[in-house]
Length: 483
Ligand SMILES: *[C@@H]1O[C@H](CO)[C@@H](O)[C@H](O)[C@H]1NC(C)=O
Image 1 (cartoon, rainbow, N blue to C red):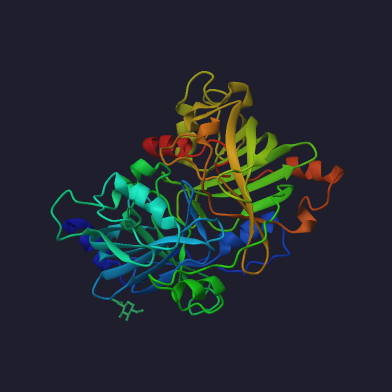
Image 2 (image 1 turned 90 degrees about the horizontal axis):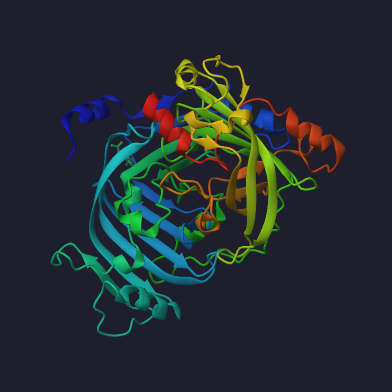
């Protein structure tokens, strides 16, 4: 139940709160390079509603990949009386063109208070009343096998028929959802966001729901500390996939068009499309550069303390090598890579981080006691930075996938970090799902042009960076503990 104190805060923050309005919001322009893109991102007006009014119909705008992997589209209806009906459609393929089964979930959900763990997010409580299942075609047999462990099925599942998996009126302990690793913990954390000017129909609201734990067994108890791909309002006309998903029902799952495989080409410069939330606590933007000829990469990770990436805390620049591996057996079209981090520079960007770094003794993170606000220090010679949880040299097993946004711009996805804060430093820990995509910076500033100047460009990157291809969450958790 909600405690009185947060309730007061909740009620006193009326309707809309505009988080840090940029003085001069600039529309994203595809012809600009990485730096100007980041600048635009930081200047963008972001409106967050606290508490969020989620009344309405929210749908997936793409085929989403969950850890496992699972391929899913979602169509959630939230009503003014706090009740909801959520449709989850599962598929056999990463295009979401071959439906396997669908779930209809009913219950209620209400925002409690602003999250202390994930600033800008709202913590919610939910109650489930009913979960129903319907299988499509031959997948029924597979679903039946998965259900067997938790459920006493008297007859074989028949495609096209609705089955009750769970009902609040059932006796305690009877629960057929477990075999499917079902969970609605995503409703525990949400964020309703609008980027750009209020009332601009081309910048509709997006509903972020909590992330799904990367370990299936942990899902049902997971307290989200990050978000999934946001849902779009079903009213958004410019989104073709949203239209397909919003008109679907339990019996008629959305069938998305099969996509030709897009080759995974890393070469060039890539940058975050939004202020990203790293499960744990911090917010960041990433800028990655790959050189396919020399198989080297650099990454810049700017960390921030606020959810719209305006208050920098520290930056990491990292570089190293990478090798391309086999096409992914788990996700068609994705490719495995191995990354090593061999060099790293850290720049404290606020007083708290500077003090933290200066507390560390000996050879744990650069020169003892020498950290100054805004001054970068190479920490390669101390084998990384213990304060940030980074050891060098470091190897990560990655998964990349190519994509494109609705306007046709190239996107690059790399693997989601394990939810337990560890790093994918062994092949068996390789991700099976993705982080928010990076977008390619324009040719003028990137590696569309192969050869000589590209190399110079790569090592001239000098401002900020976040943490991702490398050390995932550890920095976040440790820093948070100290601050
Ligand atoms: C929430 O939004 C719905 C539809 O957009 C609207 O009808 C309703 O009045 C809103 N509720 C509150 C409390 O603002």
